[in-house]
Image (tube, rainbow, N blue to C red; front, top):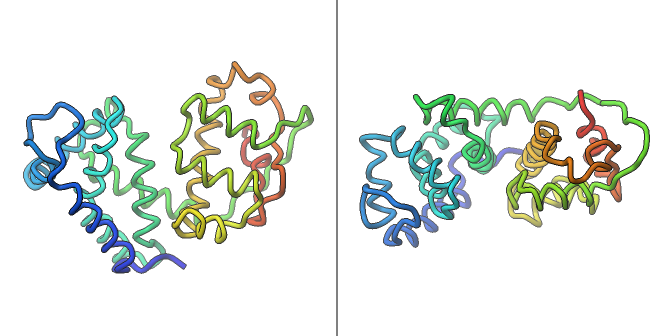
Length: 237
């Protein structure tokens, strides 16, 4: 079940966390103020401009810019969850975070907030649809652990997404149990796993230093009980 849009465990946690950050100095060059609270205030008059700055700062290694972006768009994410009972706020924040990391700023420099929210909604609803069952290809076999280790070394996915994928594909946990471990919903776990797999598909050329990973079948050490193996999802379509 999606987390209710007004769940105190979600909103209260995010807002309480933000209160501890408002007086912190930005960890990227900005002319919008001396604290993160000052930077967030700029979203009231220039949200798209602020998001462009935050996306750029996150690409350059900022550890705080992404968190400011979430807080700047939190009201929109709450509205998204309120309007669609299929979407929980927890899932919306997780999907937004990953969309933020992959946002093509050069190709889509305008209407950034609207694009992010729309893409977030599309991703969540797409995850509700059953995955197509893809035939596994022939050996050599490669373990899910090897693929995810290569993905981590090459920076192909966020640590949170990789951790969720390891719990499901390597350890064989269900999405529900993995969600309990990582303090997110089962839907958020499935969404993170899907993003890891899609990212690997799109960047197979980055895995040339790992030829057996790039060419082989991926098999989990244990089958995930959600019914979709990494082997089935990773092979090219």
